[in-house]
Length: 326
Image 1 (cartoon, rainbow, N blue to C red):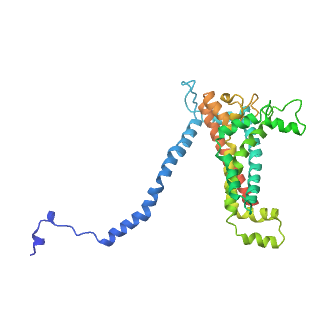
Image 2: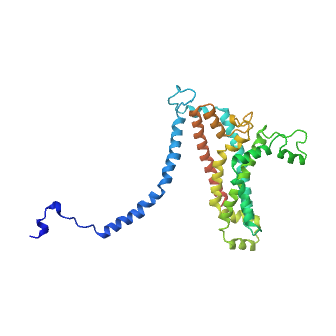
Image 3: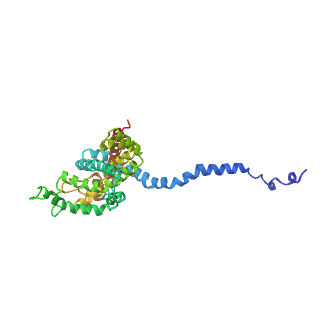
């Protein structure tokens, strides 16, 4: 009988693990687990600051919750959403939001596409022009909005001065804040000024990946630059176009800073004396933090969220069809 057999079972040493199994476990841990650890901070932060507020907001929308009356509590069900259907302020702000959205998004993306097409050509000082069109995007939105508020002032505003040069408003200056159409144009101008350059650079980066041979062949076939833009460039940069359309849709329907700072009395969040340019985001702020009705404000937020999903889906489908993806 050997010494190993005579040694008690508790003192016997277990055989060392096979080197092959250890390497296999480390390999699986490195390839299967480590990538999830690296990307986990994003999902953790998104769950805390994205998913949780969305779910909590949905719960608040189904409750009676007023900060000025703590006794008014309990489940409201769909009463807050039913209230939206007969709320004139909500429908007015919805119309204002879509009006400003159309006046800003469509000209903005078309102008950005044309500017990017021009910058894609061989021009002197390309770097200067590319940096120059991005400067409005780098300007703080509050500062630029305050400048435009002065620009569109009724008295001594540069906008009215330019109009007087063509014989408009010489006797009675135009009050840009008084009418819906004029306020929409002024606010849309602020939005376009800030975002045209940003979208143009996105389009330009996509255009530079298109082979030059494609344009040369089209030119030989007699295609004009305008036809090349719509039949070659736009279909080939379709993913970027879809991205900018969706991004502009989300930003346009959530418009808040520009109309807020354009108002002569921003603290009221009324969007003018007759709510002529009040957006949904302004109304949500007013109902929630001025009227202190958090339950109703939360239902407006969810209504805006669903509207954005529907409009973004429609724009996505239309953009894919225009770009040639049928």
